[in-house]
Image (cartoon, rainbow, N blue to C red; front, side, top):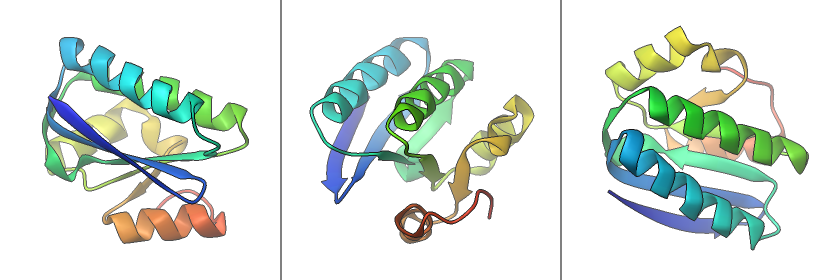
Length: 119
């Protein structure tokens, strides 16, 4: 599994590719944390449009990154989830704390404007 990391203003954008499972979640976490620590970003956006599978390890990875963004006064958003990931997102309760948008453009806009959570 690979991840592309970009910085746009105060937003770190992580685009993982492939499956997020026990093994890959740790690597993804480390790469995102390293980039976030070295930046002056406040917000984190995960673009999941290239993720084909995610298990509960991905939920833990998201929660940790949410806490990191929150420590800087920022938010975390997720865009591009498929139906299976969306179901896991809802069941886990992440939908109560993490912004979820259909497209990256929507996620960028909501964090840029500081809008409230939800779709």
